[in-house]
Image (tube, rainbow, N blue to C red; front, side):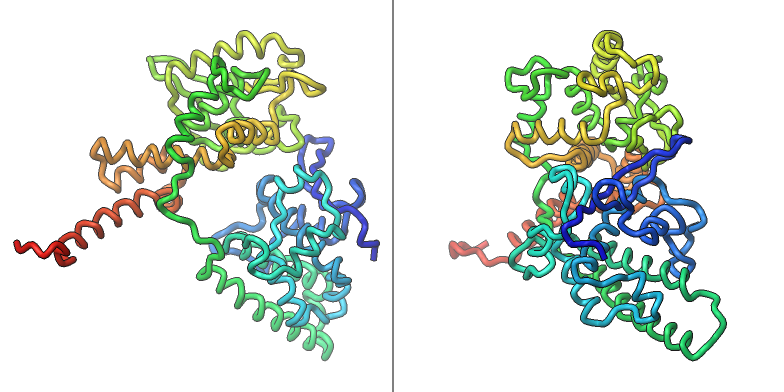
Length: 441
């Protein structure tokens, strides 16, 4: 086993056909484990892990695999730090003890490692004190992750163990050793499944439903400082581009992937109804980014204001047109300086823009918070215009690009539900609580 001082990180590569794929690597170039990366970019879901109604023969989208890569990095670092070789364990038919599974479960609850963490620290060492502290931390010493994140990490371990089991033991002729191996495998699955099922019921984070994604005062301040003309705008350059990016995120509620995927040919300005088209074109050959833009929702048309469309056209005809390399692609938003000038803007760049504006209003901000804020405003406006809850949900699903049976609306609707319940409860209490002044009706 390599020394614990080796650096482990997720890196994105691009093959000769333009296909992007993630790898978990050591020291910047060497695959951390051949089995780990074969699972990640091959049959990541074994036949034993099929989700109901899901076609697992189809490879998952790039951004899904990237999410898996960070889960696998955490898994790999944890067991490497504890001198456990998962490939060797499964090949020998030993699998993991109850205590070893328990240790991993504790690590999953507290240790947060994702794309944002890696970008901020560049490379995470598996011997880093931050990781050691996280693995051995108590519930009171570190913030806990959400139940969903915790559950996904356990699912990733189960699925990877299943993959290794298939590689080494599946379809072998029955022997006494094979019976013992299958028994150990089934015991492992039974034990970890109990925690996976329990994670659905026990969310480790309690969100205050009354808490707005962005408080009103800070949101109005944000709307002012994103303007190119604002004296409080935190940027010295690229002000028009950054204003348009923020306005699209705030006004339309689209995801960053959809924003980055936006092409000049997707803009429509006719019949007094300015809009842009959200497309779904995975593995777009014209997208040269290592981390290609991806639209998770279904294709749809997104309406925008006439003023915003004018700003987009102004940006395209002036700033964008003046940069080199822009003739090579059709993407609207580009890098305006440095080695990547004229090339399509990246996820990292947009996250940095949003974070900088958040710092300026003294509020931790990321793109998805703007999507949550859009939903709050949408819900409020729909109520004021007299739409029924059913109609509001129908309109929201269209605007968000969700499928008809999506339950995402209920997630975004927590604030308004809490307010409505509070209003009803308040009225009931005012009628049932005795008059403390002693007055008689």
